[in-house]
Image 1 (cartoon, rainbow, N blue to C red):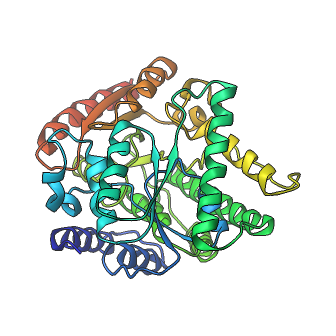
Image 2 (cartoon, rainbow, N blue to C red):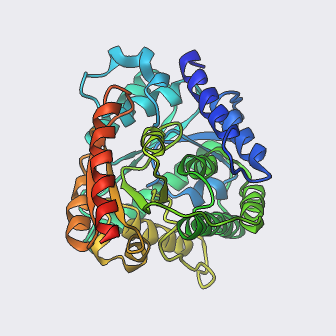
Length: 382
């Protein structure tokens, strides 16, 4: 494992342990992060997942462990710089570095040309990789059917590779565990938004640990424990939210900057659909029907750009905020379509911040955020 990356993870864990308001079971979440990011040991059931657009229910339903390679730091990909052009999407480079440290099979969704090239590069390294072709246009019945067929093909390829069948009860169990965890994560964010129980850095850390567990039942128990603890409400200067490009551990740059400015982020949105309506599999008669229901959900809600303007469930959380930070990682151009929609739909101050995993732009972002916070504070005082 890359030593620079390990030191970054250690430093962030140390920051968490020094937080003032910690849940009683914080060591559980720390252990998840340590085991996945520092002390990872592969098993024959591990499979790397490069995108939240790949239905997690299928992976867990087959008894496989999703090892998420979603980016978060260029430290882990620095020795692979020479394999990529200088302007490569930092998420692609970071994800590649995470994957190459593990040497396990993987699944890549073709959500951009960069990920197509990444699949080719991984195959050149003689690694085992499965692919999921994503339809270019999402608002057409034909595209929805193409996506469904592509997911079914992926499912059959995985069944053949691992010599196991995706049975209805296993798929239903995976669906139940995933939805339960997502609902608890949603409640945790709701609690943070209403009470401000701890720092945004700690909230991000706990949510990120979801991508480090193979046991969602145990993860759910520990989230419930956090929710059931007694928390005090603190007076907040202003309430900010962050949306846009997902922030995956250990990328906590924005949280550190806002903390230095005396403001915490109470609301954050990532791509695991916790704020969207769930789906019901009880009326499905077989695996194919269940897959159809699952991929219909992913197709409508998880394929970007997400239609924020029409998503009432999403907007109701943002409406309680004083301002919104729209975070865009360099190279993640598709998220800018959401920014245009959000700017038109919300009657809230909003700032767009484009950044990457480097620290060179910290002072520039700090200056812009400081001005934004002063403006929001002034509007709130009126």
